[in-house]
Amino acid sequence: MTEHEHVRVAVIGSGFGGLGAAVRLRREGVTDFVVLERAGSVGGTWRDNSYPGCACDVPSHLYSFSFAPNPDWPRTFSGQEHIRAYLEHVADVFRLRPHLRFDSEVKMMTWDADRLRWDIETSSGRLSADVVVSATGPLSDPKTPDIPGLDSFPGKVFHSARWDHDYDLRGKRVAMVGTGASAIQIVPAIQPEVAELTLFQRTPPWVMPRVDRPITGFERRLHQQLPFTTQARRGLLWGIRELQVQAFTKRPNELGLVEKLAKSNMARAIKDPALRAKLTPDYRIGCKRILLSSAYYPALARPNVDLVASGLSEVRGSTLVAADGSEAEVDAIIFGTGFHVTDMPIADRVVGADGRTLAEAWKGGMEALRGASAAGFPNWMTIIGPNTGLGNSSMILMIESQLNYLADFVRQLDVLGGRAALDARPSAVHAWNQRVQERMKRTVWNTGGCTSWYLDANGRNTTIWPGTTTEFRRATRRVDLAEYEVLRAKDAEAIKEDKQGRQGKGDKQDKEEVNA
Image (cartoon, rainbow, N blue to C red; front, side, top):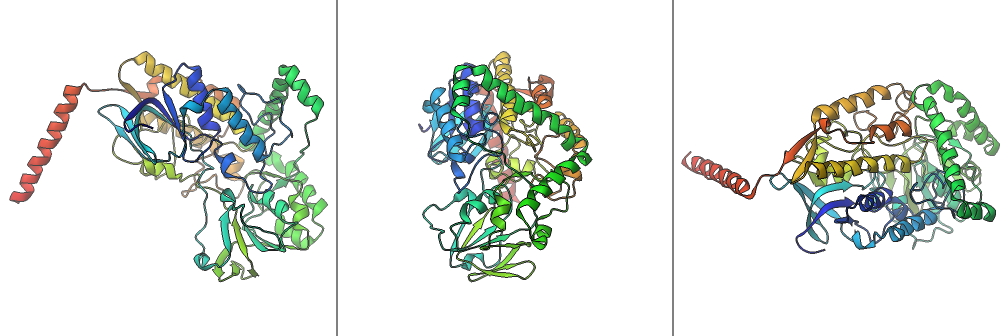
């Protein structure tokens, strides 16, 4: 990266969102762009999460781009290594390598109101861009709780998203903290090799069977030779999930039958009534993320596993103390405690038109017009932004909808011509957010009686989309210029006069302070 490089578009992150944005930009004829990636390879969360058992809980043919179908998925639910290989393949097939800037973590990006551009400081140099697409993703920065005494723990400590592959767990006494999507995959993967496994559970999850199997050679050959069969398979998977949305968003009471299926799944593996009681949630299924596993409950029933139905509250040397007072001696602690979702660190590094950071603008809760544009941050868009998450389907569907919006955003800037920028009107952002929050009131995520990572510090659901993917696709089909303020760049002389005026005002203020 040169010292003063300027590009039309800078994309932040090279996971599904970032690579998808890059592909869409090329298809729109935009080749003057870079993809800034803090790591040394593409993949995003599927590069960072490499823990034992890591896999996707969305079927493979739905968890891939519609414009880059993969007829050769080896399993119905793909493992981390297969998804990461798929993303590397996308980077190659769509000739994205020349645009990638690895080891280029964004330290700060500041809006230049005079030149209508973003000035970006990265770990590998500086550059500027007319448009910024933030595709850092909500599952990119691990969250580790502040546990008293943790710093003095003599053993090994790491987060599931930063797995230490050099540390041998065999024969060790291991604590797993958390019972989320990562933990239920890690537990059965490491249970056979550790001496003792203590699982600290604050809240039990609802777990449904994971109906996974190898995709046969015949199926793969069929998909290769008859591409429409791949599309049909994807369409069927999508359609089933679209039909399920109503129960999550409008009729949560209909989920009672699903709860019975989940309890039956538990009863088949957990024969101990006391353990079953600890594992049975007291909230409506779907309120927190429904997890898929056919191995989690059998692993918990093994003699070397102890479930502590309480959160970790203190560390005393190698002794871990739960909130209920129970103790466990361990050699290693693995945190499966999620990510900074509603308080994304990237928000502290984005400085908008009024000098505020995005984190300051979102202090009362994240909100963005159609999940993409924040007021006061011109020509800045986010992929997987506020209220674009899903509780039952593939995020790739939402990403592709936002890519449609991005494409039209760039087209609108072309139509406007000259040096122009689009800044979401506060009234439009507010109106959109009000509609979303109003619909959210009756969803299972708000009424199911749980506390989840979907909710921010103020108790608002700023992560989930309260509708179908079809509805979101319609809402993001095109940019409505009435929802934006059009900004025009000043000419060089006007910029010079502004700077002289600001300098003169500053000199006058300095003199007044001295005289005072």
